Length: 261
Image (cartoon, rainbow, N blue to C red; front, side, top):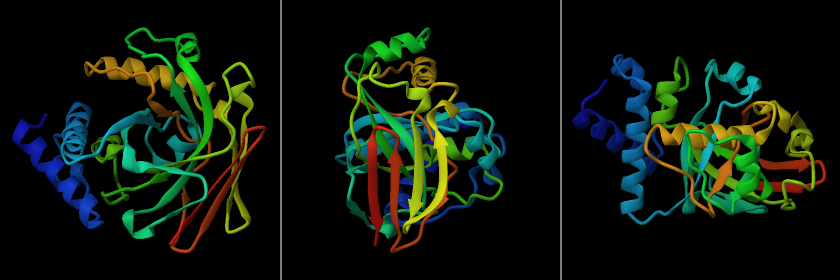
């Protein structure tokens, strides 16, 4: 475990890296004694400093909930990060490529809560009852740490690689469709690069939200009404470059588009 001073030093490094669009050496290479609890503490310090500077917490993201994502990253358990108001964009937005580092895209569903959720015993039924609607979303991954050799300890510290999200398509109530079978085609520059189905997220995307509520309870936190929860990706991370247009079509839920300049 790290002492509080070291945690704060690392959080400040990550604040600077975000501001300067820098990529840092792996934390676990420099601090081999780091543990997951250190990572979540560092993430919380980083988030609190951004909020103190004017950002507003609007939700959470869940990562590494599907087998395809665990295989792609070599990490075998889910993680979470926070979403601030300046990370949320509408479909059709033009995003500044240089705002992000190691830029990749994932296909997700976002749950918008109408009721709070508190662990430790949150179930899928609690999540469905607390959800106002579900909406298609793209997540923009933004990694400030070198990718080679990284572990979940590195990823969590870096806000689980959360950079931004793009929301679009058609919001639906949870009883309007079988969320397990929501499928998506992911395009880059009019070419299909990947596809997936939402059931790949722990068998049902709402299971990811239940996992999050229960994990947050271990840290004395909970989910509030109005929060946006990115439930996890059901495609592999897709690399994008400056000038790329990204488009995802969701069965029965419309589409989401963005462009990087």
